[in-house]
Image 1 (cartoon, rainbow, N blue to C red):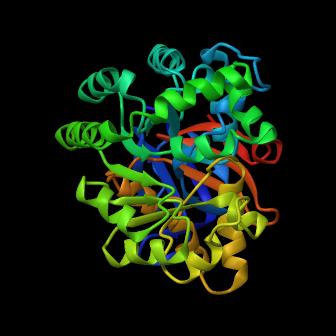
Image 2: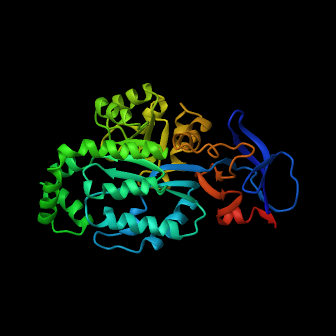
Image 3: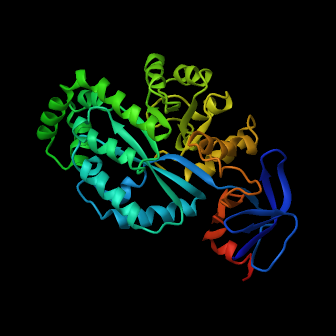
Length: 383
C-alpha cells in the first residue's frame, strides 16, 4: 500500500496543540508520528500548518453549478464534478450537500432531488460527499419519497426547513417574487398561485414533520432545524430529536440551544464578511461567546479556511479552537467518530495550509493527495 509522509510541518494535535512533527499515512489512516518507515511520497511541510480535513456540515454552493443562471440548468454529474474540485481545493474532505427537497419546481424539485442522488451514487468521488436533506415542511407530495430514501440510507443528515411562510410574504413584491419564480422556471403569477395553494396545507404540516422525524430517528441519522426564529421553535424541533440548530436568527435562540446541549451552526461567510448577509446574528461574536460551535460553508466554500484564521486573528479564540469549528465539532455533530482530529488510526484526511493568505497547499483524503497547488508540487518528492 502506498505511503505518504508529511514532514516538518506544524501539526495540530487534539491534546497538545500545534507540534512540529512528521506524520506517516498508510492504508488510508494516520499510522505514525515522528518515525518514518517505508518508501513513498514525501511532502515537505516546513513553514506550513498540517490541520485536520474540513468537515462541511451544510453547503449549498453546488446549486450554482446546477443552475448558474435562472432557467439555465446543467446535468448534475457535471455540476458535482466541478463542485468536488472546489471542495478539495479549499481543504474540505467531507461535505454534506444541503439539498433542498421542496414543493417548488425546478432547482429544488423532486426531479432535481432524484437526479442529484443518482449522480452521487453513479460517480466515483474522492471527497466524501454526503446528503443533507433540507426537508421543506409543506412538501407533502414528496413525503413518501423522502421517507423511502431515509430508510434506504441515501440521506445522512435531515434538516427541518420551513421557508413557505416567508415565501408567501415575499412574493407579493415583484422583485423579491421574481427570485423564486425564476429559480422555479415559472411566471411570477403562476408561482404565486402555486404558493398560495401550498400554503393552505398548514394544518397538515406538523403530522408530516413528526413522520419524517421518526424516520430519521429510526435510521439513526442526525437532525437539525434551520433558521429558528424563536426559542419555542427550537424547543419543538429538539423534541423531535433535532440536536443541531442551524443559523438561529437571533443570538438568544442560539444561546438557548447551546444551554440545552445542542450544536449551533453558523456560516463561515458571516465571519469572513464581518456580518450576516441577512442582517442576523454575528457568527464571530457567537463563536467567541461559546454559542456557535460549528461553522459551515453555507453558500461559499472558500470561506471555511479563511474564517478559522480570521477568528484566530481576532485574539479571542486560538487556532486550535477556531479550527475545531470546521473539523472536530461538525464531525461530532454528524456522528463521524473516525475523522475531525489528527490521531493515530483515524482517517488520514488532512489539509496543509500556508498561514500567509491563508492558502491551501495540499488536501489529503484517506492518505492520498487529492489537491496540490503549484507551490505544493515543488515540495513533493519520492514515489
